[in-house]
Amino acid sequence: MIDLIIIGAGPYGISLAAHAKASGLSYVLLGLPMQFWKDQMPQNMFIRTNPRYISFSDKENSLTIDRFCAETGTPLESPFPRPAFVEYAFWFARHANVEFTPELVVRLDYAASAITVTTESGTRFTGAHAIVATGLQHFSYIPDVLSGLPPSLRTHTFGQTEFNRFKGQKVAVIGSGQSAWEAAALLHLAGCEAELLFRRDAVRYAEEDNTASGLRLIESAEQFYRLPLEQKQERWNTPRQGTVALFLKPYVEGKVPATGGASIEQAEAGPDGKVRLTLSSGDTRIVDHVICATGYRIDLDLLPFLPSGLLAAIRREDGPFRRFPLLSQHFESSVPGLFFVGSLASHTHGPAFGFIAGLRQACRTIIPYLAHTREQSTRKGF
Image (cartoon, rainbow, N blue to C red; front, side):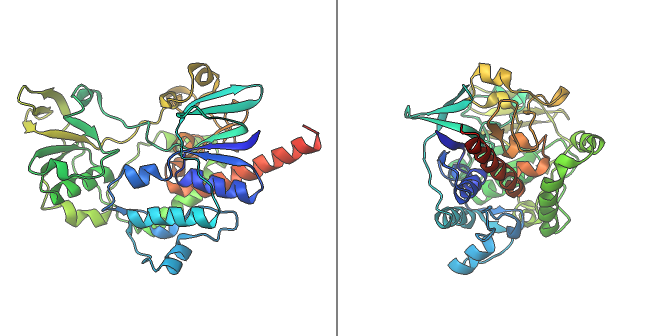
């Protein structure tokens, strides 16, 4: 039996595998390596977080992005190019001797204190523990008013890798955050007639240095779980005010029209293959395509590889947060041996886990716990 099954081969999964290997745990790392960052995001843009705070995690904390840049001659610049970040990920994996099993999981079952996963090829792996580190790919959120449009006329920013196919078309981008401004910038560069439509009165650009924001997220990852309940509730109940990185401002302002204070009241597909949008102001827009930069709605029930019986067995957070699993201080769910990291841990352990900033804390919490658990079992003769 394998000590650990890791589902998801992005930054969290790769870092967890590096820690597991260094701690002598047997593991299998399932998923297409860095698929989200490499194949489902446009590569001609940047990461907004300061690069000093996007390093992966290894047990000795030696395989940093600073070292990668120094050894490969890659400029350590902010904002950091996405292709360079992907190169860093594979550099890290090579140096940490991380082994990939590039297969997607289609089912996870729990029985007799063991977890079995089945991949799309029919291969089965059984382990004592499993960590779900699958990122955001199952959680794209499209508002109801837009969900009735056919997929040929409406897409989400998730999975948009290039925008040249929209050249010469009118495209409405719905949203006021980072992904909306990025999509608008790339549409303009591709020769599209784009417009930003959003409910806020105006966009909010990030005013602070991204060094400070990155450091604060890492610190919150270490502290959030231990905060008094009152402080946690205050953070949970405070609406997140997304901002746009300043580096995007010259790509959009003066180039792409932006209409604030405009919610979409109706969206209709016409017989001419175009979309008619009716705004709350009563104004209309006729466009060739709608791109929803409307974020993600984390929901455990949307994970396609968890069967209904297992979903019912996983205890949830209270009240309006039932979409999240309730986790222990070690990120373990109520199903023994089943752990969640990344966005699914972002309620119990705080907002840092919706970002790379949380991966170090996850690795340094989970892997020593699993190593200790295995040691205890060995001593008892299990």
